[in-house]
Image (cartoon, rainbow, N blue to C red; front, side, top):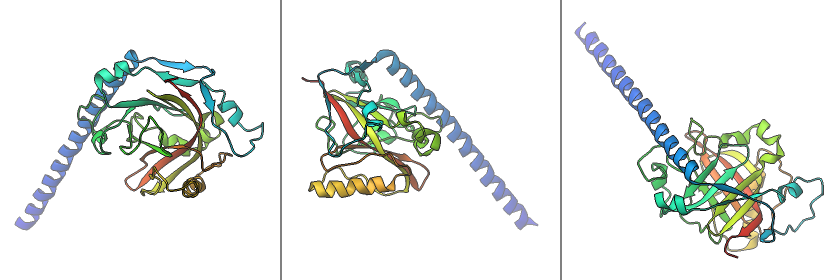
Length: 271
């Protein structure tokens, strides 16, 4: 009888501890969300995103294969670029590197970069501690010169902030609208337009996070691997001269959601 009472008390204690921990996590999650939303409000008030219509400064990236006139690519290259002035953002965080928009999602944020890929997993835009983290560029990348593979990360938040809506890209209703196949970036050096060529969910791996290549053939084999993984056919091609951008977030504890797009239009801001 005494042994049974000890077991019951032990189980009750475990339950209470678990309950307290769960309540703590919920309160912390809500607190983090409120802090992030306040920062987003301040950012949106202080920053204007300008639509840049086609002009003589925009360069269309040459395609090696002939593209049929019915392909939506011809509509994509007519799309407006976005242009952001980063002066106000720099007052809050000097590590800001650019702004990203992803069609068909809520992704519309400034992104940052530091000397590692861990810091902004738990730091907000103003560098305060926050489990929501922030959107950040791989520390190995040079956004000014554009590597062969530019990689941007963010948490998949349940409140759909950060990369919380990146999961949309694996759904049929996202794929059925070809206007969604576009990523827009603005940096201090240039404004760019990227055409999606691959989206997928994969067991956690680092093989898609390579940023430099010893030859055009190595890069082309890499890009073909990414394309072959895609859940959908985006009716586009890749050549060894292309540059790509990769977005990566968690799907669950063991899997990632990944998007790849190739550069199709660029405007240099320093010309």
